[in-house]
Figure 1 (cartoon, protein in one colour):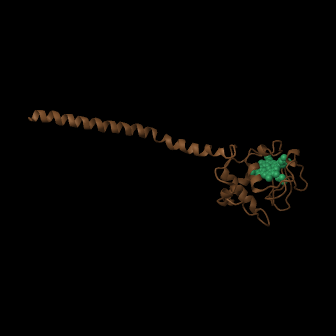
Figure 2: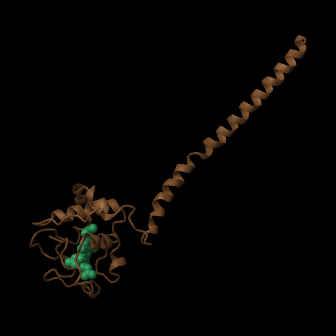
Figure 3: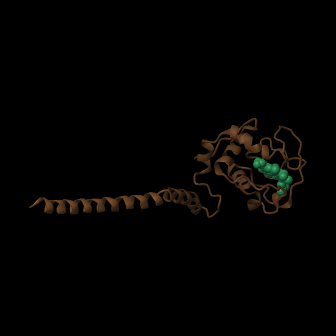
Length: 181
Ligand code: HEC
């Protein structure tokens, strides 16, 4: 083989190598362009896909017991500032726009002395403010008690609600145990 022919072959090999390399690069570029979308989709599916257990949009991904076990009452106290516009949290405290909320967990519904509850709230008396009922009511008050007088939109984030419940639990002479995770 003369050097001219060698050059031709070498050129062809190099050209092929470049082509393969180039295709690979192109694939990488396409892959990189689409890659960031994938984790974004996965996270959204993980969040919205959690509603299949109970059908509601606020169905927690984790059980209430699990959320309460890692809840932070200090963060809950900050959440509770939203309630202070209408409620007092003190033992023997007065009713304001809403009833006093001292010792709320496991208290009978619509039973605080001297407060004029809506008929809809009274229709739940006989039941108690368990952690589960509080979680349901605070996530969407009108979802649980459609004609409630409590004009509050609710706290939508599951962990934020659990933090709040963990704080409300401390407002008692005998704090009630959390439900099992
Ligand atoms: C805008 C005023 C307002 C705000 C804000 C508000 N509430 Fe209320 N709340 C009320 C009223 C009024 C009622 C009585 C509802 C009824 O009778 O239908 C009530 C009732 C309740 C009850 C039922 C108590 C019982 O004795 O049965 C609970 C529990 C409660 N609120 C918790 C909360 C929590 C927790 C927050 C803060 C995250 C909050 N509320 C924020 C006005 C408010």
